Image (cartoon, rainbow, N blue to C red; front, side, top):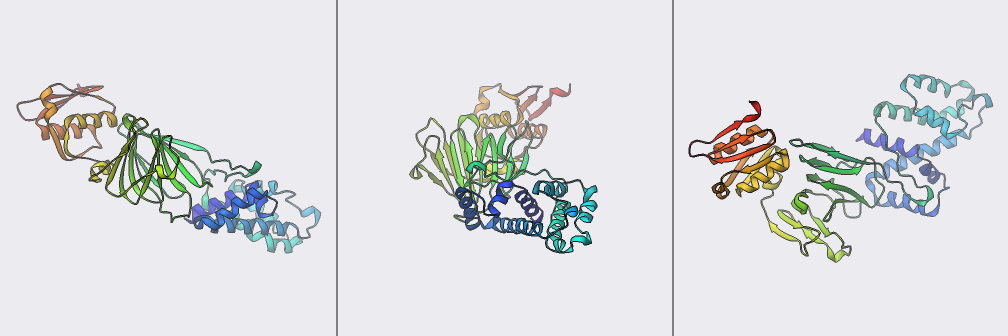
Length: 373
């Protein structure tokens, strides 16, 4: 966490709009915005105040009487270039501010400059996202990044505030790459993901929001799964509380509250949100490398395989449609999954390059991998 704080502080002190606010030169709207963050966001208050103190100390030190030929930094921009220089030039910067000809200035400013250099040593060469610019009375939102997964692949994304997103195969999530100084932190999901959102006390920190084509899910701090395949959004809540709002609705009374162990299903075209009590583990077990089924029709299993592994599944015999699948099956390796299914259902499963065929088998179940032939 210290490393994250250092990065945020350096981002702040190198932002012109933030320095303008520190010096009391910001417009009224900008002042109100920064004061709002200090008052209502305890999680970033200390970093903002520390950065402000450094900016003011550097400014105060720069006004000390310094012999003209020792004024190494004629502007903040020059100082900033020195602060962000490669490590091999650090010694030169330190010696340039420790000349005995202006010891008084050194006492007030050198400590802060060295602190900045120490921060940069800690951060190494991490790419910085600029803090929001407040120029023209508007905040510039940090760059949007999109993370995608291939078939059979999962990825974990950790956002700036600590929120953890586990992205399932054949999915994508778009999010802000840096610290977001807004009332709402939004991510756009296509596919399936599990969210472990950092807890926020009511009124503290931005509201986390998952956006889908069918509507939005608002949370303060919770664990839940969202699936947007087949033009329908499904939300399964493991703990906490979320509010769901369908597309096109904006009033507070249009929200539907979801509670732990509940599953919500909604879409842009449906007039209602369907809610039912469920065993959440069946819907989130994929985060642990498992398929969890409870009397699931074989068609449901086949659809799941198609979504996650990108191969068409053909059920060759209509009688197989009546088969049900129950239990846990490892899903991290497709061949192991198909082999386990064939033994469980006592059927023959053949895997081709782009297709998987389920066939009736009167004998013991078998799995044939034709891609190896």
